Length: 152
Image (spheres, rainbow, N blue to C red):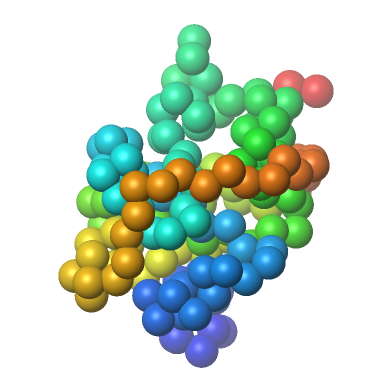
């Protein structure tokens, strides 16, 4: 059991995130029901993941193909060993969706910001409208045991 009483150490506090914003090996991603919120202001250095445009197949309401997912994460500066911290609006609704998505595709270190976008803002923490330009990384999907989200 994690120190916070949950079965896994999934949640990170706003304090923890503020202290680790510039750490190598951590990528923060905002995933909102209203994707326009990112452009109005987001956690400094956070990338944008659009729940529909990035994470849903454009033809079927399904997962994007393995190769599309690998390219997406690599372009966003995420490699297999990157710790990804997700947050968003509406009580992390689509951040939780993205968490599930990353886990389906076998990403090991995925966390969710406790309180999400609203808590970050309520604490008057820094926001920026500047989008980062992450360095391209290599990403390779590893599927969870017993789960095959893509055709082989």
